[in-house]
Length: 112
Image 1 (cartoon, rainbow, N blue to C red):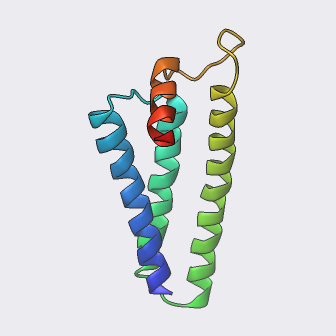
Image 2: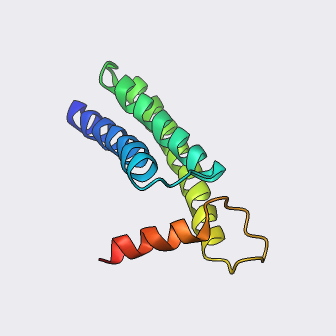
């Protein structure tokens, strides 16, 4: 059980470092409010995984599992909305503050 908590914590920490150091500092992409909310959700999931490293007993583990499932559900909703907004044509109520050129440049980098 501790192995999965350690692995989950590692993924959360890696994704937050990737978002900050690579996307923000290296590619100079400014995060929109939904990006920031997604990062908070991943951070909270990391806290739950870190707590799992110290909790013994099935009852405490189930409570942490419920907490992580809650944050996963919130993350799916936020990320789904984020992807939906980014795929809307410009000028049709797109609220994502990331500039379209930045998004297109990042998508080209992924395709390469």
